[in-house]
Length: 108
Length: 112
Image (cartoon, rainbow over all chains, first blue to last red; front, side, top):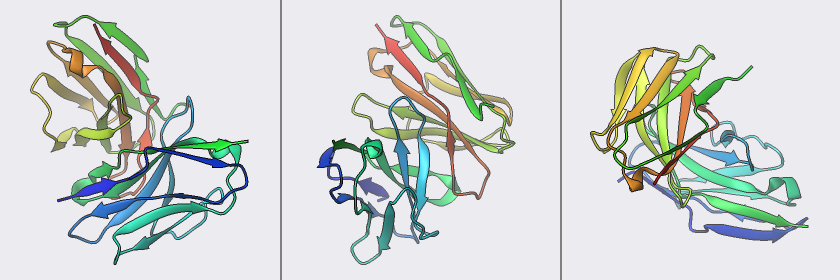
């Protein structure tokens, strides 16, 4: 079964604290994983993908095939990071399966 | 310049009515999608079109019918609207084989 899970529906952290948004996936093929973000009153947009292995807005995510995880991390949370974060798995035929989303709230 | 646009932004209608949501992209992409985001913010794909051909059709009621007059447009027509159809509908586009999807602003449909 192809599935993406994000165990935390809501996550609150203080400004300057580390943040980790968890994502686990289930996929029999070679996974292609992404994080999308939706800021308040803005459209959903790509944050990063696992293949690029880059840091975007201070966020990084490492694909762990053994644990089938793709957790999103940032060492020091900022208020502007408050948003809805979706982990996503791309399968064949360009089908993208989104996780249920985690709403991150950074407390000043 | 708006990359992916949707009209209307808000749609309030009564049960049993038929309504359409329009989507247009000016990115030159060849693949377009419709997603449904429910009240719990869960985002699920409904349809995908590549060059006007249907390539993904998830288990969506027959009351939902996508129409792609050309590769820059993908409209969603909904017949006999039900309360459970209330949601935010997102259109997206990408180039086939590309990893990134570009989303529209969403259409909030409320069925009363």
